[in-house]
Figure 1 (cartoon, helix red, strand yellow):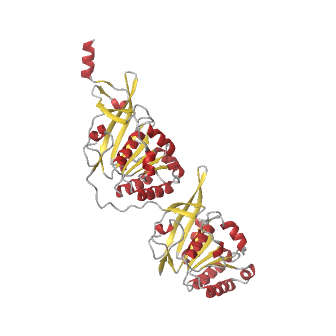
Figure 2 (figure 1 turned 90 degrees about the vertical axis):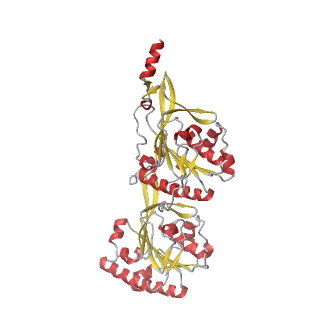
Figure 3 (figure 1 turned 90 degrees about the horizontal axis):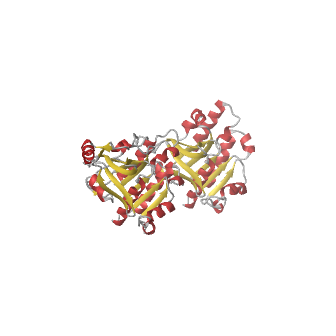
Length: 480
């Protein structure tokens, strides 16, 4: 057996190399899930690498009709169809009416003449329409016995629901099953690819997000993170002098830091200042925003004297608008960007918004754990921001369950003192490191964020409505 490329973007990674040849793989799904696009893409990309390919269809569509549907895709080259490395073989209705023996003989006659490396049969279940259950099973047994002698990669398409597929004789006769779906999600539909079976090879199971573009099918493999082999004993500056002191010298290299607070408390500014500090030290960075588009981020940064365009032009910084991507596509984009610019720091701004992008079956903590573990494995120091609902008073750190997977948690709060709203910062947790327990004030000015003095005169700071300590209250009363 030989492993060969699938010809479908992203799928080789999930299959850890590609399809095996010879083998028979079913591409199944209901109408409109992209089965024909998938197999055509595989076929034409293989033909470009000099594989001899055959496209067998029971629909008897003329080449002009196929060209009309497929010509919008970049992988499609009509010159390869018929005269080139892709041979078009329609099985006419007259042959289908003659029964299974005639169908198989017609296919074998063409295969013997062409000797293809890769064969598509689109769709396979049309050949068994009208047959009762026993006759269908017998046809598929005979058909597969014949296919085993073709010494080719055979891709079958079949129109099935997942429940119908499990009951079909095809499900245990084929070597592999890839199920395509197009599921409603809020106002849109999300495409998924799920490898249910693949004999003789390792693969990454479960649902993978995918989409159909002008380049055809693109599959977005979920992030897979091997166990970390080492943890760097190195400190990374926060970019904020007072915060370095609070964190015992900065963040640990490759750690995950959660900054949680209400709107306007300074989360994004702290995160961006951390990225800019890295850029000044020749450490490339990535900003992923659920809140603002790249243009707004650039303009806001100029208020603090940070010219992000300069670093983007130098390929040291990449700004990604998260709302432009499906969640799995976002993970793939993050991975590709990190490899492209060799990022050392990352800002993931607005994790609370992620909840609205996730399908119901996926908790936000599970998705974030994959992201966090991947970045740790790459020794990337990452800040994640989360917006809490309360301005003052009791509050949860996130309300999403992601704080346990973070190495450090920093809380920002508004504090009302003498009818004035001020901002407080505290480090609640730092794994593997000591940290300051004090609650300090932060000020945002034209240079960014500054951490200033400790709130020494007040208690109850985290309540949002602090009171004078007993000693300070006594001194103040005595002065009067």
